Structure formats: C-alpha cells, structure tokens
Image (cartoon, rainbow, N blue to C red; front, side, top):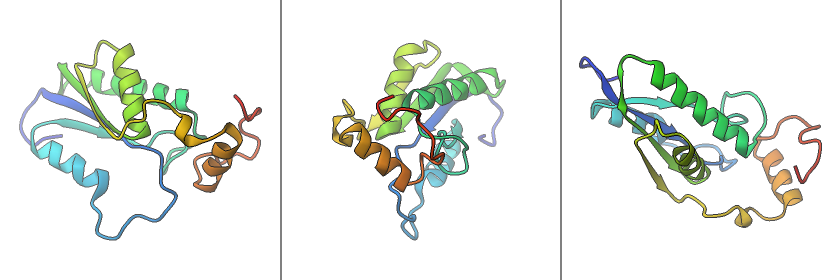
Length: 150
C-alpha cells in the first residue's frame, strides 16, 4: 500500500508461465514493479497463480482465471482501494488471463497486457505441453490431470 491515506486505485499484477530457469541475477522482476506502482500511488496485489512459486496446486488455465477473480474479490473488499479504479496488468499467459478476467468482471476498470498470446497453439500439442508443464514444475501431481486432453 502507498504511504498516503487512501483510497487508492487498485492494481493486480498477473505473471506469465514460469520459464523453468533460475531468475537472472540482478533482475528486479515483479517485486520491483510492485514497489514502483506503490510509490506511484497504487494499492498493488501481486500473487502467484496456482502451480507457480509458493502457491499450491497444479497449473490449470481456468484455475488461473478463478485465482484472478479471487484477487479481484480481495481488493474489492479492501477499504484502501478505490473500487471505481481497479485495474489488472498481465504478461504473457497472465496477460491472456487479465483480458479474460476483464471481459467477464465489470469491477475491473481497465486492463494492460504485454506479450499476451491470442491463442494457445504456440504451446504445442496437449501431451507436449503437459510434459513441459511437469518439467518446469507447474504441474506437480503425477496423477494430474486425469486426462491429457482435459
């Protein structure tokens, strides 16, 4: 939260799929982006989608949409947030989820994305993507999903 009294415009940051590589040393990433928006007067929420970072669960694109809705619900309840100015910003797969969420939730006043895919075909076939998702650690449960094509 910004140091000044609110309410403040709200901003939810949505990351993309992890690269599966260690972070580049010295790369400030989302924590620095969060600080910059806070010092600019925004109440910022950055979280890890299910299956990423410290979050539990397995990657599920519609689950990510539910995670974003939960983030919107959370900021919507905060008295420090100006409900008329609640925004979402996303990168890559997080950008696609930001667009999807903003199209379905009228509480979001705006959306900003970069490198958001227009479709999921670049991810390859379902079996290949599932193997990739296991390799980068976003699908952790060996029995998930029950069907590759689900």
